[in-house]
Length: 235
Image (tube, rainbow, N blue to C red; front, side, top):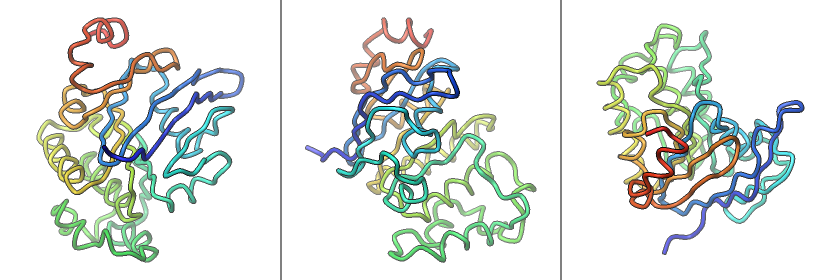
């Protein structure tokens, strides 16, 4: 049985006086892929941000690789091996692809992910090294954002709506790349409105509704649970 990589215990997060997360709990093992599903406004993005302390939880615990991340700076969490690719992709418009990747790769000490390996995963980036990210399509920006995250050598990759606004052919390309990452042993948590795509990747599912964990289990059990699908996802 795989070792537990991440254990999330009763997270509560506020934005001002608004109680956004009201008891989020789930666990993830090595080599797992979890799809976090829920309607718009359910708290999915806040959950990912809370895992890396970009939105600091008011209570609860995030245990990653046996370490409690409470009060830990986001950059240290990335160094430890949990990296977020945000919904807005976090681009630096004034930098070229080469500059964006080099900033990260110069601090990459263990060579698990190198620029040649990145270009093997996303060949189109190799031919756009001198282009600035604001000249890119949404799909190319997403590939660059994922590439930057991989250069931190994560053990767990958090993806917030990676296919949002992308053409179907780019979605297929991203799906193949993410499938390859999972086969390599990387663990992934994905928040995604494209439920079909998310379930094709995931082996576990956590459903969030109104800031609370409503259901967590295997993909097969989720697919057989029409009650949860209808009540919390409207499908």
